[in-house]
Image 1: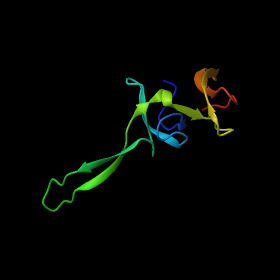
Image 2: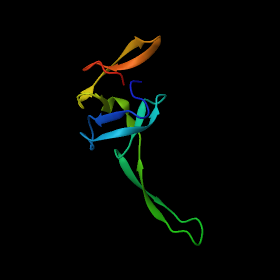
Image 3: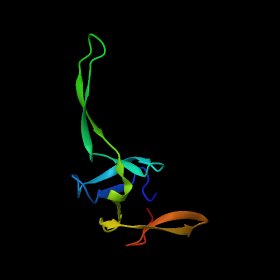
Length: 101
């Protein structure tokens, strides 16, 4: 999968199209990602004890990784990724600027 935890991405489709956010979790086995502040659903949580209150939680839900694109660190626009060997290690690079990701 081309997206990893901690990457800054832009949403390409859906109700949150155009939003930017940080990847909180990557789920490569399912091909999905969880992005901060994107695809947020409200979940009602019931009180389980007498002194506890019920609450409404806003939870970022996973969506398909093909609906996001990485942000180029130099230009700030969306980019694709490539691989390059630098110092004996494989490194992800931006296709637009060639900067390491």
